[in-house]
Length: 218
Image (cartoon, rainbow, N blue to C red; front, side, top):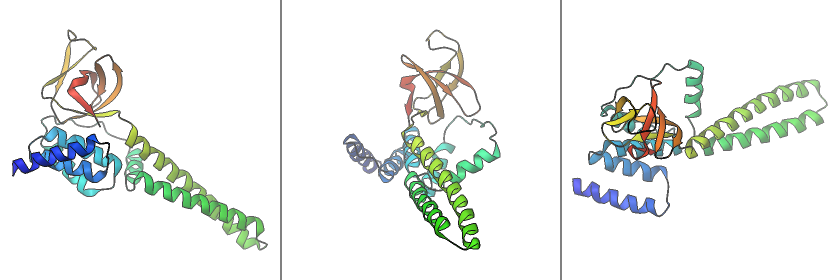
């Protein structure tokens, strides 16, 4: 059984090496890595799949299972409820879906704008005006969500720790003080780079410098 999943990893890696990218490809290779006990790599590819298709519940479920097996249990800094709600709403659809909604809303704005200009009855003009305002707000929201989803797909500011017992230091120097230790599978945010070091921030707000070879960008 293990050999079968190892063969699948080789096959999927070859496909990735040819430049192909898709939710299914990332999801399948993540499952194969998970089956072979390579949890950190599974988490990495589940996150890559989720960046393309954030509304996929299967990916989220498997990612949660993989993350539950990591050694580092870091409590996140409490998030403002409105921002959390907006992010959850944004993640209901992917970049393409939000773009389609944005185009539809723009067409609705234009159609109601023409109707407003041509209509002679006051009632029609009033309702098309309010409808145009509502469609314009939805257009702006959908456009913003589409841009945010696209940024999440191409922005590599998040990474996964790929080595166990990786020291996070106070400065980008081997002789610097160790602030804390991270284990494989932990997600971090990269804030800046210096030579072969990355400054990272973890979920509870702590930050420090880690060797670039210890993490892999999502």
